[in-house]
Every structure is written in structure tokens, then in C-alpha cells.
Length: 285
Image 1 (spheres, rainbow, N blue to C red):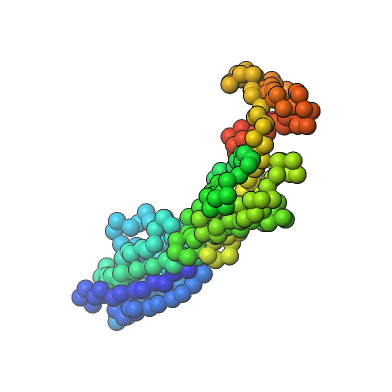
Image 2: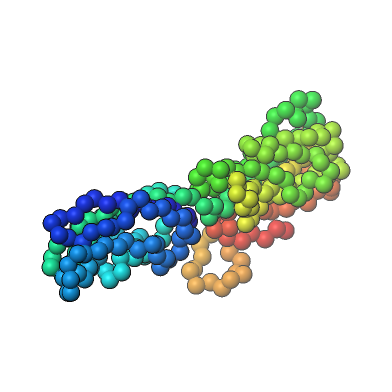
């Protein structure tokens, strides 16, 4: 996180400490415990009365993100800074001498966003079925659209997409801005040649950070004569004790397909749909 801060002198009281610098700009890499050029004040008095102590102004003593060192006037980072949550801070610092006289400076800190977040896909898995024969206009309509988000602001939050795997024949293309996937070569789509496609989609933000995990798009090509498999029941309920061991079978689901039974050309493959954090493991069989 980068930031600029200004210190503005508000004035002194009686013979209070003087000469707090104002309009100081500083561009610094922010890390926990980092300090800035210190707030300083001088006192025309001599001896003990010339010693100056610095504190945050009333109402800001519990500020978590910043603190001021009482002896030196250094302003330090004491908590996490996040541009997406707050873009600026403004608080007073009071310089007090041993005689009890004081003066105040106003510190304004403006944060500048850095690219500290990667784009994230949600969901990560997409499932699409295409039935042959495809109409001549099929290349103009999107097959599916993937979505990745980035919480950064400005150009760092702008996401672009590209296909990084599973499209060796160039059958599909993706709109790099919208994430919509189209058929680039619809005549090459064939259920007999390749009934199943899996595309890997990557997203990058305006600062060049790429998703840590690609999205996967599963595309099934179905012949017009084929019928999709049908589960015996629309819902399966199983009860499991909380202390069962990993790998324990808790139940099974069953689907049948007339194509599998009569032609013998197709096997039924089971696959979990949804994020890994939402569902447990399903074994394909």
C-alpha cells in the first residue's frame, strides 16, 4: 500500500511549542511499524519546560491504524491498511511542553491503491450441453459466460479472460472483456469425434496478476438421437456420523441412459457440481 501524507500547522497557544512543519509530502511503502518523517515542534523556553511530548488528539486515542511516538513525534503504522475499506485518514497531533502549553498539527494521510488482490472465479466450474446439429447462427451466441472478480479499484480491478487449455483445435473462443465463450469453428463440433470438452480459463487483472486457480468449463456434445442419463431419484439423503473416517462410503447415486444400454457406446460418468468447500467428494464410476 502506498500513501502520501500532509501535515498542516494549525497554530500555537501563547508560548507553546512552535514550528511544526506543514505541507510535507511523502510517498512510502507501507508496512506494519513503518514510520514517516516525524512531526516536530520547538519550544523557545529553556530547560525542562522546553521538552516536548507528542500525543494523538482527543477522540483519536483509540485509532488502530496509526500511533505517534511521544518522545520523537514519529507517526507509525500500527494496524493493517486497506484502500478498498478506507482511502484516507485525518487526525490531530498535540505537542505539549512540560509547562502544560500545547499546539496542534493536523495530519492527513491519503492512501494510494496497489495491486494486492488476485482475480477469483466464482463459481470455478461450469457445465454446458450442446445438442447437434448446431444452427448456422450458433457462432454468434455465447455458449456460457465465466465470471471472475477483483476487489481492487481502478485498473487493478479490471479483469480480462483467456482460454489456457483444452482448446487445441480452436473450436472455442472467449471474449476477453465479458468472459463469454463462443463457438469459433462450430462445424468441427462432433459428438462422435469428441463428445466431451474441458476448457481451462484464466483471468488477469490490470496489474498483471493472474488467478491462482483457473476456471473449468465442461462442455458435452450430444447427438440429437441421444438422450441424457436420468437419475433414479431426484434427491438422495444419507445420514453420517460426525466422527466417520475419511474415505468412508456414505451412499451411492444411480443414473441410467438408454443410449448406454442399447448402443454400448457411452459410459455414465458421475461428477460433483459446485465448489470443493460446498460439497464433499464424489467418486466417478
